[in-house]
Length: 355
Image (cartoon, rainbow, N blue to C red; front, side):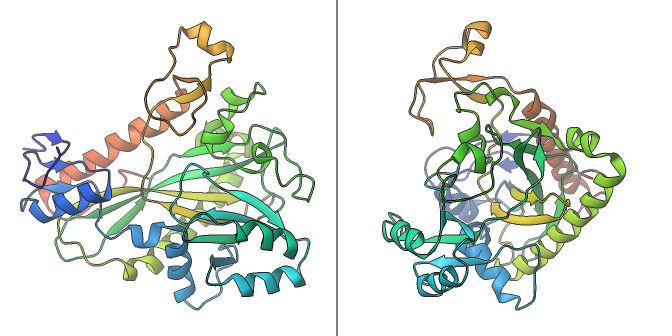
């Protein structure tokens, strides 16, 4: 029989038709979970924000009380400010990265170094909570530019009252900085295009590299060689499997049939060792990239200026992204295929669908 419909919820708290109720905001999740029919699926696992804020993930990993070499040292602010400043006194040349707890798209993210710099910058905190994290030096470079990986973990909760089954999608995005890499120092901390890979920043850099800031994992595997990539991919899968096992006890058992696509941001160093940077529960499935109106691509493709509310308030347009098409379209298609099989045939997740 399969899925009969995929329907996005309208405003309000009344029940909606369809086998899958696709939700986005926290209010959507709360309202729909309360009125979801027995056989319906929610596209969000209630409770995941607990592990997907910056501080939430840090707490979940710290609770394990074990050495996690792939987890950069992290402090929750403002609560651990004193401990952080003591670390800075002992390690004055250690670069740190500041991230607001609930922000996305690299909003209000910056680098800092040394006790005086850290004290000054965090004293100007405009958010109620944030983290400071040790900045990973010697990252893997692509054409001289820093990169990281946006991977996709899919949670499936086919049975009410049970935990999730987490699987890792076989493809992902390699996000590349717009500017050449330079080691973090007091003179380079301000160069966001050098240190931050987020596409909200790199795609808007007016230096001609904006169109070359993403590629697929398959592209990366071709660059480094299949043998090296196979070893790295096994290390990544092991790390993320450990992460999800540590996080699951912090999320209540599912109150409804649900699934969710999470983003896992992973950094590889020059030795191909993986580090977990963060988890994201509000994953962008948008196809395309943002370009400034001065980009030659605007005239070449006849793009129109964007008039919708966007992260960047500069005049810009949206251009196609072949990389997004290669990664996000099959991601969603495979996830819905698994949900369809679970909906029709029970709680066992078919092997080999996502990997």
